Length: 81
Length: 351
Image (cartoon, rainbow over all chains, first blue to last red; front, side):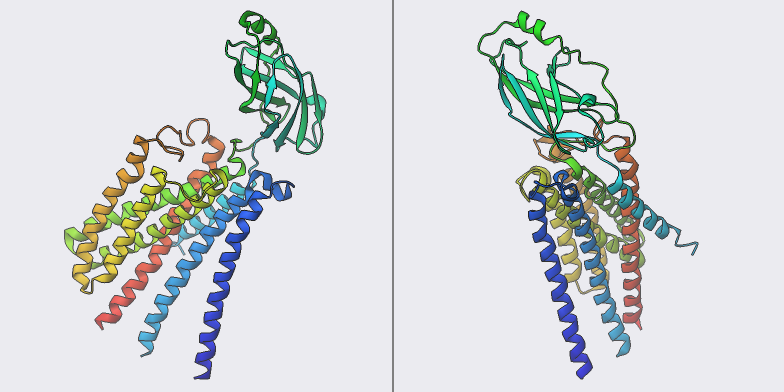
Protein backbone atom coordinates (compact mmCIF):
# COMPACT_ATOMS: atom_id res chain seq x y z
CA UNK A 1 0.00 0.00 0.00
CA UNK A 2 2.74 2.38 1.01
CA UNK A 3 4.85 1.54 -2.05
CA UNK A 4 1.91 2.08 -4.35
CA UNK A 5 1.15 5.54 -2.99
CA UNK A 6 4.83 6.44 -3.18
CA UNK A 7 4.93 5.37 -6.80
CA UNK A 8 1.85 7.45 -7.52
CA UNK A 9 3.52 10.47 -5.92
CA UNK A 10 6.70 10.00 -7.93
CA UNK A 11 4.70 9.55 -11.12
CA UNK A 12 2.70 12.74 -10.66
CA UNK A 13 5.89 14.64 -9.80
CA UNK A 14 7.62 13.29 -12.89
CA UNK A 15 4.72 14.50 -14.93
CA UNK A 16 4.74 17.93 -13.31
CA UNK A 17 8.48 18.37 -13.80
CA UNK A 18 8.25 17.33 -17.46
CA UNK A 19 5.43 19.81 -17.99
CA UNK A 20 7.42 22.56 -16.27
CA UNK A 21 10.47 21.86 -18.45
CA UNK A 22 8.30 22.06 -21.57
CA UNK A 23 6.93 25.45 -20.52
CA UNK A 24 10.38 26.77 -19.62
CA UNK A 25 11.75 25.68 -23.00
CA UNK A 26 9.02 27.48 -24.90
CA UNK A 27 9.39 30.61 -22.75
CA UNK A 28 13.12 30.70 -23.37
CA UNK A 29 12.57 30.55 -27.13
CA UNK A 30 11.24 34.02 -27.59
CA UNK A 31 13.75 35.90 -25.50
CA UNK A 32 16.75 34.13 -27.04
CA UNK A 33 15.56 34.60 -30.61
CA UNK A 34 14.99 38.32 -30.25
CA UNK A 35 18.16 39.21 -28.40
CA UNK A 36 20.30 39.54 -31.51
CA UNK A 37 22.84 42.10 -30.31
CA UNK A 38 25.72 39.82 -29.49
CA UNK A 39 26.35 36.96 -31.85
CA UNK A 40 26.28 34.35 -29.11
CA UNK A 41 26.30 30.94 -30.84
CA UNK A 42 25.16 32.52 -34.13
CA UNK A 43 21.97 33.91 -32.57
CA UNK A 44 21.78 36.61 -35.27
CA UNK A 45 21.23 33.81 -37.76
CA UNK A 46 18.25 32.56 -35.71
CA UNK A 47 19.81 29.14 -35.21
CA UNK A 48 17.77 28.89 -31.99
CA UNK A 49 14.63 28.52 -34.08
CA UNK A 50 16.03 25.33 -35.61
CA UNK A 51 16.99 24.05 -32.17
CA UNK A 52 13.48 24.87 -30.91
CA UNK A 53 11.93 22.97 -33.82
CA UNK A 54 14.09 19.91 -33.15
CA UNK A 55 13.22 20.10 -29.44
CA UNK A 56 9.51 20.32 -30.31
CA UNK A 57 9.77 17.17 -32.44
CA UNK A 58 11.70 15.45 -29.65
CA UNK A 59 8.98 16.36 -27.13
CA UNK A 60 6.40 14.99 -29.56
CA UNK A 61 8.22 11.65 -29.75
CA UNK A 62 8.51 11.56 -25.93
CA UNK A 63 4.75 12.16 -25.61
CA UNK A 64 4.16 9.32 -28.07
CA UNK A 65 6.27 6.95 -25.96
CA UNK A 66 4.57 8.15 -22.79
CA UNK A 67 1.15 7.44 -24.28
CA UNK A 68 2.18 4.00 -25.56
CA UNK A 69 3.65 3.08 -22.20
CA UNK A 70 0.39 4.06 -20.50
CA UNK A 71 -1.57 1.80 -22.86
CA UNK A 72 0.83 -1.11 -22.39
CA UNK A 73 0.62 -0.70 -18.64
CA UNK A 74 -3.15 -1.21 -18.86
CA UNK A 75 -2.56 -4.51 -20.70
CA UNK A 76 -0.01 -5.56 -18.08
CA UNK A 77 -2.54 -4.87 -15.34
CA UNK A 78 -5.10 -6.97 -17.27
CA UNK A 79 -2.68 -9.88 -17.43
CA UNK A 80 -1.90 -9.42 -13.75
CA UNK A 81 -5.59 -9.74 -12.86
CA UNK B 1 18.48 -8.70 -36.94
CA UNK B 2 18.01 -9.05 -40.70
CA UNK B 3 14.35 -8.13 -40.42
CA UNK B 4 15.19 -4.91 -38.60
CA UNK B 5 17.56 -3.42 -41.17
CA UNK B 6 15.16 -0.55 -41.92
CA UNK B 7 15.13 0.50 -38.27
CA UNK B 8 18.90 0.85 -38.35
CA UNK B 9 18.54 2.74 -41.61
CA UNK B 10 16.08 5.10 -39.88
CA UNK B 11 18.53 5.73 -37.01
CA UNK B 12 21.48 6.29 -39.33
CA UNK B 13 19.53 8.61 -41.61
CA UNK B 14 18.19 10.54 -38.61
CA UNK B 15 21.72 11.03 -37.27
CA UNK B 16 22.89 12.04 -40.75
CA UNK B 17 20.09 14.61 -41.02
CA UNK B 18 20.76 16.06 -37.56
CA UNK B 19 24.54 16.25 -37.98
CA UNK B 20 24.71 17.47 -41.57
CA UNK B 21 21.61 19.60 -41.12
CA UNK B 22 23.25 21.59 -38.37
CA UNK B 23 26.87 21.54 -39.49
CA UNK B 24 26.57 22.44 -43.17
CA UNK B 25 27.54 26.12 -43.27
CA UNK B 26 25.32 28.92 -44.51
CA UNK B 27 26.55 31.13 -47.35
CA UNK B 28 27.40 34.73 -46.45
CA UNK B 29 24.75 37.40 -46.62
CA UNK B 30 23.77 40.92 -45.63
CA UNK B 31 21.58 41.32 -42.57
CA UNK B 32 21.03 45.09 -42.63
CA UNK B 33 22.21 48.34 -44.20
CA UNK B 34 22.00 51.85 -42.78
CA UNK B 35 21.18 54.47 -43.85
CA UNK B 36 18.63 53.12 -46.29
CA UNK B 37 17.65 56.39 -47.92
CA UNK B 38 20.23 58.47 -49.84
CA UNK B 39 20.27 61.58 -52.02
CA UNK B 40 21.76 61.67 -55.50
CA UNK B 41 25.04 63.60 -55.74
CA UNK B 42 26.03 62.94 -52.14
CA UNK B 43 28.89 61.06 -50.55
CA UNK B 44 27.79 58.44 -48.08
CA UNK B 45 29.18 55.76 -45.78
CA UNK B 46 26.97 52.68 -45.52
CA UNK B 47 27.19 50.63 -42.36
CA UNK B 48 26.60 47.05 -43.50
CA UNK B 49 25.93 44.23 -41.08
CA UNK B 50 26.98 40.94 -42.66
CA UNK B 51 26.54 37.33 -41.68
CA UNK B 52 29.06 34.51 -42.18
CA UNK B 53 31.23 36.81 -44.32
CA UNK B 54 34.42 35.59 -42.60
CA UNK B 55 35.49 39.17 -41.84
CA UNK B 56 38.19 37.92 -39.47
CA UNK B 57 40.01 36.14 -42.27
CA UNK B 58 39.57 38.58 -45.14
CA UNK B 59 41.12 42.02 -45.47
CA UNK B 60 39.38 45.21 -46.47
CA UNK B 61 41.20 45.13 -49.80
CA UNK B 62 39.65 41.75 -50.67
CA UNK B 63 36.17 43.20 -50.81
CA UNK B 64 34.40 44.85 -53.70
CA UNK B 65 30.92 46.36 -53.55
CA UNK B 66 28.39 47.90 -55.92
CA UNK B 67 25.08 49.68 -55.89
CA UNK B 68 22.89 48.67 -58.82
CA UNK B 69 19.34 48.42 -60.04
CA UNK B 70 20.29 46.70 -63.27
CA UNK B 71 23.44 44.69 -63.97
CA UNK B 72 24.48 47.09 -66.75
CA UNK B 73 24.24 50.21 -64.53
CA UNK B 74 26.23 50.03 -61.33
CA UNK B 75 28.62 52.16 -59.31
CA UNK B 76 31.50 50.65 -57.42
CA UNK B 77 32.34 51.51 -53.84
CA UNK B 78 35.06 54.12 -53.39
CA UNK B 79 36.34 52.73 -50.10
CA UNK B 80 35.66 49.62 -48.02
CA UNK B 81 36.71 49.16 -44.41
CA UNK B 82 36.15 46.09 -42.25
CA UNK B 83 35.15 47.36 -38.80
CA UNK B 84 34.70 44.18 -36.76
CA UNK B 85 33.61 40.57 -37.17
CA UNK B 86 30.16 41.58 -38.40
CA UNK B 87 30.25 45.07 -39.83
CA UNK B 88 31.78 46.67 -42.91
CA UNK B 89 31.81 50.36 -43.79
CA UNK B 90 31.31 50.97 -47.51
CA UNK B 91 31.75 54.44 -49.02
CA UNK B 92 29.85 55.42 -52.16
CA UNK B 93 29.93 58.58 -54.23
CA UNK B 94 26.40 58.71 -55.58
CA UNK B 95 26.25 60.39 -59.03
CA UNK B 96 24.09 63.51 -59.47
CA UNK B 97 21.75 61.82 -61.94
CA UNK B 98 20.15 58.37 -61.88
CA UNK B 99 19.39 56.06 -64.81
CA UNK B 100 15.64 56.26 -64.34
CA UNK B 101 13.13 59.06 -64.90
CA UNK B 102 11.55 58.40 -61.50
CA UNK B 103 12.32 60.67 -58.55
CA UNK B 104 12.83 57.74 -56.20
CA UNK B 105 14.62 54.56 -57.28
CA UNK B 106 15.53 51.51 -55.25
CA UNK B 107 18.96 49.95 -55.52
CA UNK B 108 20.49 46.66 -54.45
CA UNK B 109 23.76 46.33 -52.61
CA UNK B 110 26.16 43.65 -53.87
CA UNK B 111 29.30 42.64 -52.01
CA UNK B 112 31.94 40.35 -53.46
CA UNK B 113 35.08 38.77 -52.05
CA UNK B 114 37.27 35.80 -52.95
CA UNK B 115 36.39 32.43 -51.34
CA UNK B 116 33.02 33.60 -49.99
CA UNK B 117 31.65 34.72 -53.35
CA UNK B 118 29.16 37.50 -54.00
CA UNK B 119 26.02 38.24 -52.01
CA UNK B 120 23.23 40.76 -52.34
CA UNK B 121 20.56 42.57 -50.33
CA UNK B 122 17.94 43.31 -52.99
CA UNK B 123 16.11 46.65 -53.12
CA UNK B 124 17.76 47.67 -49.88
CA UNK B 125 18.62 51.30 -50.63
CA UNK B 126 16.41 54.13 -51.89
CA UNK B 127 18.06 57.01 -53.77
CA UNK B 128 16.20 60.29 -54.33
CA UNK B 129 17.09 62.63 -57.19
CA UNK B 130 15.96 66.25 -57.57
CA UNK B 131 16.63 66.76 -61.28
CA UNK B 132 16.22 64.07 -63.92
CA UNK B 133 18.63 63.47 -66.79
CA UNK B 134 18.54 59.84 -67.92
CA UNK B 135 21.26 59.95 -70.60
CA UNK B 136 23.78 61.66 -68.30
CA UNK B 137 22.80 59.24 -65.57
CA UNK B 138 23.49 56.25 -67.79
CA UNK B 139 26.97 57.65 -68.49
CA UNK B 140 27.70 58.13 -64.81
CA UNK B 141 26.38 54.74 -63.70
CA UNK B 142 28.02 52.52 -66.33
CA UNK B 143 31.51 52.96 -64.86
CA UNK B 144 30.81 50.40 -62.14
CA UNK B 145 32.66 47.54 -63.86
CA UNK B 146 30.26 45.02 -62.38
CA UNK B 147 31.83 41.73 -63.51
CA UNK B 148 34.21 38.89 -62.61
CA UNK B 149 32.22 37.95 -59.52
CA UNK B 150 33.64 35.28 -57.24
CA UNK B 151 31.91 32.02 -56.32
CA UNK B 152 31.62 30.45 -52.91
CA UNK B 153 34.28 27.83 -52.38
CA UNK B 154 33.02 24.70 -50.69
CA UNK B 155 29.74 23.28 -49.50
CA UNK B 156 27.09 25.58 -48.09
CA UNK B 157 23.36 26.11 -48.07
CA UNK B 158 21.98 29.31 -49.66
CA UNK B 159 21.53 32.48 -47.63
CA UNK B 160 17.93 33.68 -47.70
CA UNK B 161 16.95 37.08 -46.35
CA UNK B 162 14.91 36.99 -43.10
CA UNK B 163 15.20 33.18 -42.95
CA UNK B 164 18.96 33.01 -42.31
CA UNK B 165 19.78 29.78 -40.43
CA UNK B 166 16.12 28.83 -40.10
CA UNK B 167 16.32 27.58 -43.69
CA UNK B 168 17.50 24.39 -41.99
CA UNK B 169 13.93 23.91 -40.74
CA UNK B 170 13.18 22.65 -44.24
CA UNK B 171 14.75 19.37 -43.12
CA UNK B 172 12.40 19.02 -40.18
CA UNK B 173 9.15 20.93 -40.73
CA UNK B 174 8.69 20.12 -44.42
CA UNK B 175 9.82 16.50 -44.23
CA UNK B 176 7.42 15.90 -41.32
CA UNK B 177 4.52 16.87 -43.59
CA UNK B 178 5.87 14.77 -46.46
CA UNK B 179 6.21 11.68 -44.31
CA UNK B 180 2.78 12.34 -42.77
CA UNK B 181 1.38 12.15 -46.28
CA UNK B 182 3.19 8.90 -47.02
CA UNK B 183 1.86 7.38 -43.78
CA UNK B 184 -1.70 8.48 -44.61
CA UNK B 185 -1.37 7.10 -48.14
CA UNK B 186 -0.27 3.68 -46.86
CA UNK B 187 -3.07 3.69 -44.29
CA UNK B 188 -5.62 4.38 -47.03
CA UNK B 189 -4.28 1.40 -48.98
CA UNK B 190 -4.80 -0.79 -45.90
CA UNK B 191 -8.28 0.66 -45.32
CA UNK B 192 -9.25 -0.26 -48.88
CA UNK B 193 -7.75 -3.72 -48.38
CA UNK B 194 -9.79 -4.13 -45.20
CA UNK B 195 -13.04 -3.10 -46.88
CA UNK B 196 -12.36 -5.64 -49.66
CA UNK B 197 -11.74 -8.74 -47.56
CA UNK B 198 -12.63 -7.75 -43.96
CA UNK B 199 -9.37 -8.94 -42.42
CA UNK B 200 -9.15 -7.29 -39.00
CA UNK B 201 -5.34 -7.05 -39.25
CA UNK B 202 -5.58 -4.60 -42.14
CA UNK B 203 -7.76 -2.28 -40.08
CA UNK B 204 -5.29 -2.47 -37.19
CA UNK B 205 -2.44 -1.49 -39.51
CA UNK B 206 -4.42 1.32 -41.15
CA UNK B 207 -5.59 2.89 -37.89
CA UNK B 208 -2.12 2.72 -36.32
CA UNK B 209 -0.62 4.50 -39.31
CA UNK B 210 -3.24 7.24 -38.99
CA UNK B 211 -2.36 7.72 -35.31
CA UNK B 212 1.32 8.26 -36.09
CA UNK B 213 0.53 10.36 -39.17
CA UNK B 214 -1.65 12.66 -37.07
CA UNK B 215 1.12 13.04 -34.50
CA UNK B 216 3.46 14.06 -37.34
CA UNK B 217 0.87 16.48 -38.66
CA UNK B 218 0.39 18.14 -35.27
CA UNK B 219 4.18 18.36 -34.90
CA UNK B 220 4.23 19.90 -38.38
CA UNK B 221 1.79 22.57 -37.20
CA UNK B 222 3.80 23.27 -34.03
CA UNK B 223 7.17 23.45 -35.80
CA UNK B 224 5.67 25.65 -38.50
CA UNK B 225 4.25 27.90 -35.83
CA UNK B 226 7.64 28.31 -34.14
CA UNK B 227 9.22 29.04 -37.53
CA UNK B 228 6.50 31.56 -38.38
CA UNK B 229 6.96 33.41 -35.08
CA UNK B 230 10.61 34.03 -35.87
CA UNK B 231 10.28 34.91 -39.56
CA UNK B 232 6.77 36.27 -40.11
CA UNK B 233 6.50 37.64 -36.57
CA UNK B 234 3.43 35.74 -35.44
CA UNK B 235 2.58 32.23 -34.34
CA UNK B 236 -0.51 32.05 -36.50
CA UNK B 237 -2.08 34.13 -39.25
CA UNK B 238 -5.28 33.64 -41.20
CA UNK B 239 -3.22 32.36 -44.10
CA UNK B 240 -5.03 29.87 -46.30
CA UNK B 241 -2.30 27.20 -46.14
CA UNK B 242 -2.13 27.35 -42.35
CA UNK B 243 -5.88 27.20 -41.89
CA UNK B 244 -6.34 24.35 -44.35
CA UNK B 245 -3.56 22.39 -42.65
CA UNK B 246 -5.31 22.93 -39.31
CA UNK B 247 -8.63 21.80 -40.82
CA UNK B 248 -6.92 18.63 -42.14
CA UNK B 249 -5.63 17.87 -38.67
CA UNK B 250 -9.11 18.37 -37.25
CA UNK B 251 -10.51 15.91 -39.82
CA UNK B 252 -8.05 13.31 -38.57
CA UNK B 253 -8.71 14.23 -34.93
CA UNK B 254 -12.36 13.48 -35.73
CA UNK B 255 -11.24 10.09 -37.07
CA UNK B 256 -9.55 9.25 -33.78
CA UNK B 257 -12.59 10.40 -31.78
CA UNK B 258 -14.87 8.40 -34.08
CA UNK B 259 -12.85 5.27 -33.47
CA UNK B 260 -12.82 5.64 -29.72
CA UNK B 261 -16.56 6.33 -29.58
CA UNK B 262 -17.74 3.10 -31.30
CA UNK B 263 -17.78 0.07 -28.98
CA UNK B 264 -18.53 -2.70 -31.49
CA UNK B 265 -15.20 -3.79 -33.07
CA UNK B 266 -16.59 -4.75 -36.51
CA UNK B 267 -18.61 -1.58 -36.92
CA UNK B 268 -15.67 0.49 -35.68
CA UNK B 269 -13.39 -1.04 -38.30
CA UNK B 270 -15.79 -0.61 -41.22
CA UNK B 271 -16.91 2.95 -40.43
CA UNK B 272 -13.42 4.25 -39.64
CA UNK B 273 -11.92 2.63 -42.76
CA UNK B 274 -14.52 4.30 -44.96
CA UNK B 275 -13.97 7.61 -43.13
CA UNK B 276 -10.19 7.27 -43.58
CA UNK B 277 -10.53 6.94 -47.36
CA UNK B 278 -12.77 10.02 -47.55
CA UNK B 279 -10.52 12.01 -45.20
CA UNK B 280 -7.45 11.36 -47.34
CA UNK B 281 -9.12 12.49 -50.53
CA UNK B 282 -10.44 15.61 -48.76
CA UNK B 283 -7.03 16.72 -47.45
CA UNK B 284 -5.42 16.52 -50.91
CA UNK B 285 -7.37 19.56 -52.20
CA UNK B 286 -7.21 21.21 -48.76
CA UNK B 287 -3.41 21.15 -48.55
CA UNK B 288 -2.29 21.03 -52.19
CA UNK B 289 -4.95 22.67 -54.33
CA UNK B 290 -6.78 25.46 -52.47
CA UNK B 291 -3.63 27.23 -51.13
CA UNK B 292 -2.25 27.38 -54.68
CA UNK B 293 -5.38 29.10 -55.98
CA UNK B 294 -5.16 32.13 -53.70
CA UNK B 295 -2.45 34.34 -52.25
CA UNK B 296 -0.50 32.78 -49.45
CA UNK B 297 2.48 33.70 -47.32
CA UNK B 298 3.56 30.10 -47.15
CA UNK B 299 6.24 29.08 -49.67
CA UNK B 300 5.10 26.79 -52.46
CA UNK B 301 1.68 28.40 -52.86
CA UNK B 302 -0.17 31.15 -54.72
CA UNK B 303 2.07 34.11 -55.50
CA UNK B 304 4.97 32.66 -53.53
CA UNK B 305 7.40 30.13 -54.96
CA UNK B 306 8.47 27.15 -52.90
CA UNK B 307 12.07 26.44 -52.14
CA UNK B 308 12.28 25.10 -55.66
CA UNK B 309 14.61 26.06 -58.47
CA UNK B 310 17.49 28.08 -57.11
CA UNK B 311 16.34 27.97 -53.51
CA UNK B 312 16.07 24.25 -52.91
CA UNK B 313 19.52 23.75 -54.34
CA UNK B 314 21.43 20.50 -54.35
CA UNK B 315 23.05 21.10 -50.97
CA UNK B 316 19.60 21.30 -49.35
CA UNK B 317 18.37 18.25 -51.26
CA UNK B 318 21.34 16.30 -49.92
CA UNK B 319 19.76 16.44 -46.46
CA UNK B 320 16.10 17.08 -47.28
CA UNK B 321 15.38 13.82 -49.14
CA UNK B 322 17.12 11.60 -46.55
CA UNK B 323 15.12 13.49 -43.89
CA UNK B 324 11.85 12.49 -45.57
CA UNK B 325 12.97 8.84 -45.68
CA UNK B 326 14.16 9.00 -42.05
CA UNK B 327 10.89 10.45 -40.74
CA UNK B 328 8.83 8.00 -42.80
CA UNK B 329 10.78 5.00 -41.51
CA UNK B 330 10.46 6.38 -37.97
CA UNK B 331 6.72 6.65 -38.56
CA UNK B 332 6.51 3.04 -39.72
CA UNK B 333 8.51 1.95 -36.69
CA UNK B 334 6.23 3.86 -34.32
CA UNK B 335 3.08 2.50 -35.96
CA UNK B 336 4.59 -0.97 -35.82
CA UNK B 337 4.71 -0.66 -32.01
CA UNK B 338 1.04 0.39 -31.92
CA UNK B 339 0.09 -2.49 -34.24
CA UNK B 340 1.77 -5.02 -31.94
CA UNK B 341 0.10 -3.46 -28.91
CA UNK B 342 -3.31 -3.67 -30.59
CA UNK B 343 -2.79 -7.31 -31.62
CA UNK B 344 -1.90 -8.31 -28.05
CA UNK B 345 -4.97 -6.43 -26.83
CA UNK B 346 -7.18 -8.33 -29.30
CA UNK B 347 -5.71 -11.68 -28.24
CA UNK B 348 -6.34 -10.81 -24.58
CA UNK B 349 -9.95 -9.83 -25.17
CA UNK B 350 -10.59 -13.01 -27.19
CA UNK B 351 -9.25 -15.33 -24.53
